[in-house]
Image (cartoon, rainbow, N blue to C red):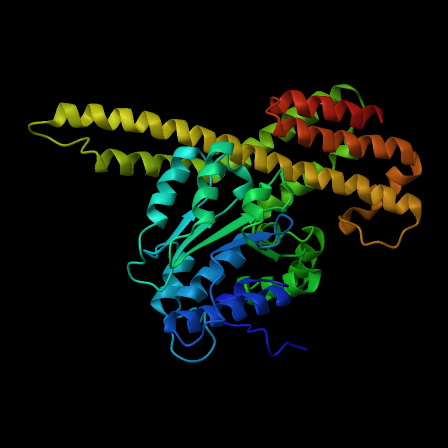
Length: 405
């Protein structure tokens, strides 16, 4: 039965399986509205928020919905209508008073953060609030974190900072910043709300929606890709065939190269067209390709700007590849977890119910100790990649252990 206090329309429908979060954010929006109107002294707006939760739980989606509701122009009813100009432009990323920072490389630099702090000091141009949304706040460098801390300590009037991170652990978000933020903790969405979202929002049939929701590990974005992209489904199947496909030692090198190549292909599918479009747009903006006086200097300046853009694009491609490879490693870890569950006789839900036959075969051939060693090898590979070990080297070391056990 639907909760009458949790709206299922407008921007709030974007938040999947988090009724408690929606209630808290909606209450904050209403208090902020009263504060703006001067009708209440007790509803002062919290100027810094920290959205945490496991990957795929919808941290940045919740933050965007909150930002849209804060700017909502609809009179009466529930804030965050999703239909007014403010709601639509915030969700589209084009609202003049909402700045979204999504790191395209491996980190957010201090220079980028200083520029952001300067922009945040201005009063709202068209909306009620100036909102700064920082996705992946755990990627802030030390210098960027210090720059952000200064403005969070003394926030400008009518400016709201929304930070998103996997957790509030000091390794993700420094204690000095965390202590000045109001926490919003998201949990892993359940299978039923994810399946319902796929059916209603993406028009996925019941069987495919239920399957994608059951194998996505609570990752909403992954569920959508699996439900709508046949290539994503094939990549997942190829990855989960690895544990039972390592029959000979030579299979180690074949599987390693295929796994790395698959992650590169996945990262490059959307990257190439985007990169070329960005370069062409920059050349046009810099006056390249024109004729007449000053053409040579314009072309020279454009070429220098393109080279700088290419560096950023290369960093973005590296991050995309590592994210794709990390997702594959999470799938592998889930397989070995399923084997341990089966060997222990636990009734816990498996990560990959559609690979129950492979899990049963592995369960009859491997000991719990060798399965745990394999699982630890996958987790160690993830840590090695986070420390900038070359992907092929890290993956070959991992799959060697998967072969030997």
